[in-house]
Every structure is written in C-alpha cells, then in structure tokens.
Length: 472
Image 1 (cartoon, rainbow, N blue to C red):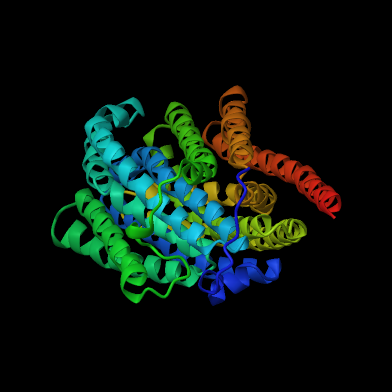
Image 2 (cartoon, rainbow, N blue to C red):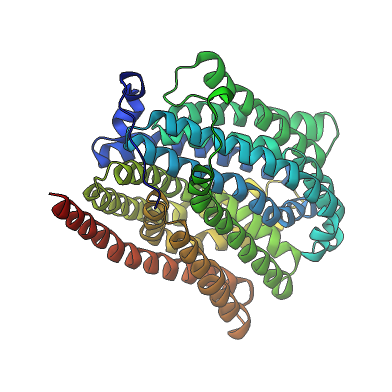
C-alpha cells in the first residue's frame, strides 16, 4: 500500500465541517454521510422509476427493451461508479492523513481518467449497440432498445464526470451537495419524461433525451460549487494538477475492481434475462425489469451506508486509527440488519399495491401478478444484504479493491447464477425458480463477505499494534 505523506501547513490543515465529521466518531460519521446519500439515491431511484413508469405506458415491448439495455448500461454506470469509489477511497485516506493537496490531486486524476475513458467508450457503445442487444435476445424489441440506448449512451461523459464529482464530495464528508444535485437532476427528468415521450410524441426516444438532459444539468450544478462557489475542502485546479503514476494506481487499485463488480452484476443480469426468456418469454424480462427497479428502493439504505463506510474506513486507515474500522463495520452491519427486517415486512405487505406502478396501462396489466410475486420473494434476502455490502465497503476504503471484487464474483457468477439455474431449470420451477435463485445466491454471498471481513479487520488491527509497539 502506498504511504501517504501528511502536509502540515496551516492552510492545508484547514478543515470543513464534513471533514471534521469524517475523522471523528465512526458511528456519527456513517449516519451523517449516509443520510444525504440515502435521500440522493431515493431521488436517483425515482429518476430510474420515472423512465420505467412512463415507458411502461408504451407497452411491454418498450419496457422489455429498456430491460435489454439495462445490463449494458450497468457496465457503463459501473465504470463511473467504480472509478468514483477509487477516488473516494484514495482521497479520504489522504484526508485522514492530513494531506489536503494530495486529496485535490486525487480528484484531478479522477477527472482526467474519466474524460479519457469517455472518449474511448462512447464511440464503441454507439457503434455496437445493435449487435449487442440482438446478442442479448432482444428480438422484436431490438428497434426500441437501439433507439433508447443510442441516445442514452451518447451522454457517457456526463455520467462518468458526475460520478467523479459525487465521489469527491463523499470523500470529504459533504454528501449534502450530492443530494442537492441528484434531486435537481431527478426533478428535471420527471418533468421532461411526459413532455418528451407523449407531449412531443417522441416515444421511447423522449425518455432517453430526458435522461441525457438531466445528467448534463447535474454536471453544470456540481461544477458551479467547485469552480464558482469554491467553498469545498478539495480544490479542482488544473494548474495544481501533478500527474503521478502512484496516484493513478491508487485510484485504479480500487476503481478497476469496483468497476468490474458492475460488469459481474451485468453479466449475472444477462444470464438471468436469458434464462427468463427460455423458461417464460419476454414478459418475464419485463417483470424482472420493473420489479428490480422497486427492489432498488429497498437497496438504497444499504448502498448509502456502504459508501459511507468506504469514506470512514479510508479516513481511519489513512490516519492509522484502525480500531475505528471495527467500530464502523460492526455498527453498519447491525443497523443494516434492522433496516432489512423492516423493509422485508413493508415489501411483503405492500407488494400487490406497488406492482400497480408498472401495470397501470391496459397493455401491461397482465404483468401485475408476476411483479407482485417477484417483490414478495425478493424481500426474504433484505436482512442479509448488510453483512456483505458493509464488508465490501471496508475492503474498498482500505484500498483492497480486489477483495471486494472477489466477493462480487462469488456472489454474482457463482452463488446467484448457479442458484438461478438450479431452481429454474434443474428443479423446473421456471420463473418462480429464478426469483428464489436470486434470493439464495444473495444470502450466501452476504454471509461469505461478512466472514471474510470478520477475519480481515482483527488481523489489520493486530499488525498495526505490532508496528506501533516496534516503533515505540
């Protein structure tokens, strides 16, 4: 692991409220950082839900088309989110060590990396979108999928760029700005969706344009805070940018494995879609697409807390306060289990009513029973999400991105895929077997992740104490 050299000038040690929280009590820091992130992600989920709800009005073929674009989009989103995690981890470790200038240089490296990545990824996505969706089994929905995906993928740079700026705010404990930017983008998208899809008669292309415009607007707002207000702890300034292989490697050591985690999720989604088409047809993909957007709402508290754990763990690791890792991990897991139990109960009771969101039109009404069954099955794994997800957060925060990637590989391509195949095809449970396979795989993956962290954190603390004793 790269050593971080503290900077001790008065200017570099000046801290904001967010940094003070980040480097203080781990429990309070997780709550303070995760709270605004939860709100931001609720808006983000509403953002995704708005597209699906308005597209559902065009019929099941249009909704299924979005479902076939989703696994490709997950890879695309994963690039930005993964690199964002790398920036959060590297920057928070430097903040914990008191290296403000180093944290700023991390942010600039992240921006440079995503700008170069967007220049490479965007043409490739636009060029191969049609053969990709056909290979994924889109069939008669391919025209819808190409129309929607071509527009959304043209905005690669906006998503990647916004993810890095969100990561910078998270690294310095200032997630309220993230919340405001995502909220503004979501509201704009929700307003534009019906206007462009139905008012302007653009159909599924209108949903894509609404997404693209709202993403660009979020980038403008984020840049305003960094370049005009200039009241952040981390400063964005190309004049102070000092290219370093060490810093780039520090970002990529977490960013690449985390990005690959999204690739694994996408790969699992592709396999699940193929199995669904095999056992039940395209309508099952529409059920999965619509239902999973609702499940994402239940995942929001866990994702927000895990991102907070990355920041808190990174600051603790950078400041060599390793005992805080145990406190942060234990607190986040316990809180997550309680949240999961509550969400399971709510989902079970409200599933029939929630399913109406995607079945309000005559063309989609026949999907109601399937979406209800999907939601009532998914709620069984909610209490098991936190152990695995918070453990991955500790690994990423301490720079062990490969550990988190190994966990995600096991969960998606071993536990989930094998379980889905076993229940759906070997036991011939069909569509219902797919749902139970997803549940079983997620539970197994979460338990393995927790066991790994349970062994890793005490070992890290022990090594730290031996090092301190030797130095004394």
